[in-house]
Image (cartoon, rainbow, N blue to C red; front, side, top):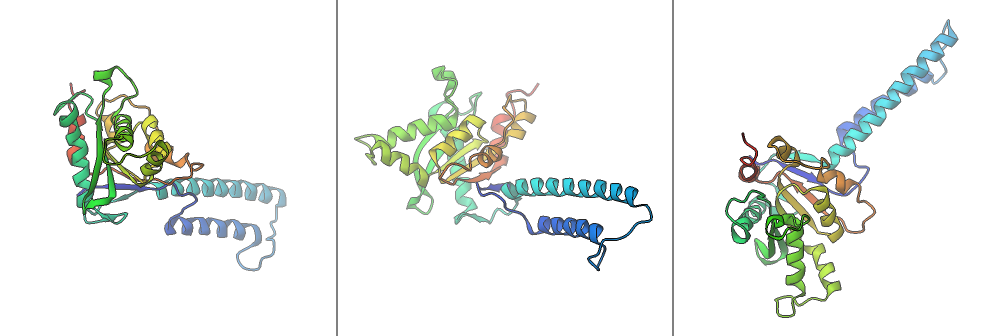
Length: 266
């Protein structure tokens, strides 16, 4: 069964369980200061030692509170779901899987069936076409063929889409301004989690959705050198941007992981 990681750019979101933990910590702090029920300060036969101990306990509890807050905010941004029947953002999982396979197929269409840098991307409009949506463009890692070190699959696809959207002879014929607006309605599927450069480009473009397959953690396990900043962290730091992007991770990993498993296998 597939595992999905769901995240948005929303902030200060806590789970019900974490709020319960925070509430218990706050009650404990207040009770320790005022007494269990009277609200009056409790007395101690050794006031100075008691006060010092209270301050230490309170400080530890407040640190615990900060830690719980930090952890639960992260959990709210990146929450695993394991139900392949889920409709994410109103789109069935089967549709997500279809487009992730198109991202894989982009390798064969643009490079080869099994290139070393097997990073493929598909950009989709889910608001048009039949029930599956409409493919706008594809892209694949093009560093080896161009010598351009920035042409990861996602960047190549964004470049291709820009050309398709603005082509005077193409199906869209948009102005530059209209093309920028159009990205806010599109979903980007990529068969591996984006590096910080590409994740940032996705946020700058303002995509409606970003869906990836193999995680950065898995790439590292397989021997791939990575800048160890996951997409959820890039998204969390992008709250100043006006457009919101829905993030979905680890989609169809049983099919995407093998593309990255052999390159560094001794």
